[in-house]
Length: 176
Image (cartoon, rainbow, N blue to C red; front, top):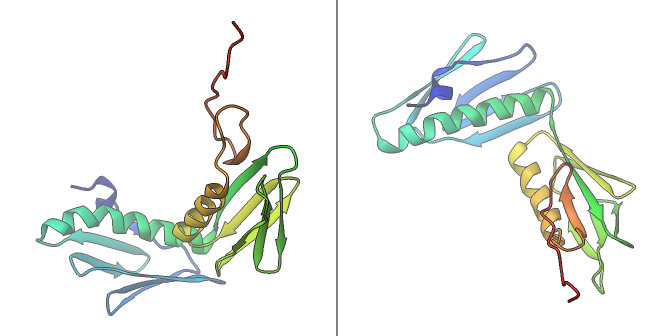
């Protein structure tokens, strides 16, 4: 039993939630997000709240809380949006936004160019990458792809990391 699935999801003013042909759509003032859902979970939209209940299948119990969390994230994304902040650490490491691409110079013999997905905005100031967007899944995946270009290494801590991420340092060689 999902504790989060039992709680009805409140719909704030200015947000419209619809369910048609197994596609859940959340529409805000600027952004519209949609997600395909399975018929295992019953979704009832009543006034200013959405109630989710599981069906009779085993998959329904697994998806019940997941769909409730997705719906809450979609509503938050449409109203407030999400932000991920990454830091570039290292001498000579830098990044810049060129049109629809992020260009990273992180110690390779070549520049790494990543295309910014639709719906995500990127801003780079003094080796701090700020990514914002309404879709939490797409934003998190793109932030992970940026971090994957040069993961922080444990000896000097050089690389791309999330803001506030703690890197466990290793001691290195000892002189005898």
